[in-house]
Amino acid sequence: MEKLMDKETQNKVREILEELTEPVQIFLFKNDGEYSEIVEQLLGELKELDDRIKVDTYHSDSEEINNYDIERDLFPAMVILDSEGNDYGIRYYGIPSGYEFTTLLQNLIAVSNNSVTSFSDENKEKLSKIDKKMRIRVFVTPTCPYCPRAVFAAHQAAMLNPNITGEMIEANEFDRISFEYGVSSVPHTVIEVKESEEWVKKGEFVGAYPENSFVEEVLKAVE
Image 1 (cartoon, helix red, strand yellow):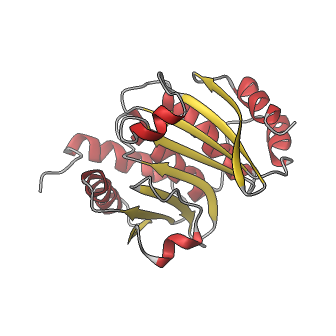
Image 2 (cartoon, helix red, strand yellow; image 1 turned 30 degrees about the horizontal axis):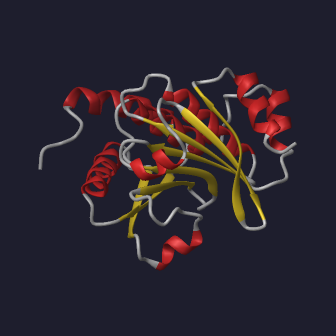
């Protein structure tokens, strides 16, 4: 089977992954579709480049999926855990290709090093105080150069607060949900809060917002 990453890309990725300090785990939940096969191959190539990356693959009907808050009609889905199996609320729905592959590498390093670098101390404190269950859903496409910033902000917010889940959703792969949320350009961020066991949309914006604006939008959702 032809590699997804050529030799030059492999060397660059191997160099980037030198920043890992602790092992990191990726749980892939897949169905029988083509997209799942691509992600499985990509993760296989990734762990070949650094043995600190562990990958476990489960089918969408496995019992393991019950341990994580995974959307049951969005596969492939990925969860990133640290070496102790701690879940930081980082979710990927769809192939992390194009610009989003860089974000995946950033997240692996962030989880490995348990580091949040996207926010000032003041904003970290604000985000950590959110006491309602929230998910930040960022719709992206692989060719969007602004999407990684929006996705990484959502994932970093999730790392700060166990009440927050940050999600990357590949808009082209999941056209039904993209239509449902009115996604016409990306990055399109939707902020939802759980009320009476239902997710309720509390805010949305288009574009990669600067740090303070992003935090302001998140905080408005729980006012």
